[in-house]
Length: 253
Image (tube, rainbow, N blue to C red; front, side, top):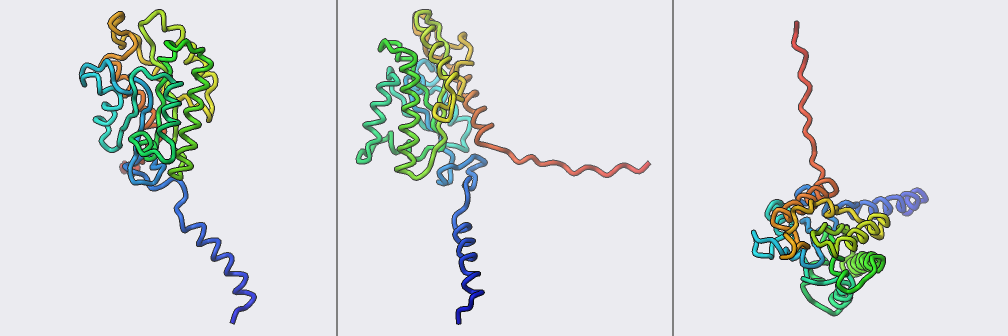
């Protein structure tokens, strides 16, 4: 027999069941990191140009860089990269449009779909395309939007996407452009353009020498970049539980 009391209690029980059926964000942590996509591991993906590839890193034969260093230092996470030497922000956006097409299966979209943290590190090559710094920053903002929308629609979660400032350079002819891009990015910092990885803080003395190069970090420079990224991850994605020792009882006099 269904009573009025039963009809009153049932919607309440249903609401509680629906509320508790799925764990609330954040998901259970993976090795202490925020596991945004709930896959049981924490994955960092760097997307960008030759600095993401690791050009200039003699220790790892020009293919190491800060991504490899992060993976070697922090074995409790997964560090991946999508790096194309010489690519500009404009061409990177075009590449993402092609590679993130729904029917396209490739290494780019497979890596994007599993990343908890995506770091965008691009813009220095825009100088060679005669770009205005405003256009570069606008395009980087479009990259953020494209990645966020793609992962939300095709993987069902919202990754944390952060933009890196550009490294300093020993090249006098390119320095003003890079500085202008950094100033614009930092002044337009927002949820749509989250500029939080401060690679511009790396010392210019840790860049390779000009005229041989001058735009890529030395091995020591890549180590400095890894430290900056690791510091960000440690503070934003990992919170160690402090173990507070019990307060000792006063010693009797």
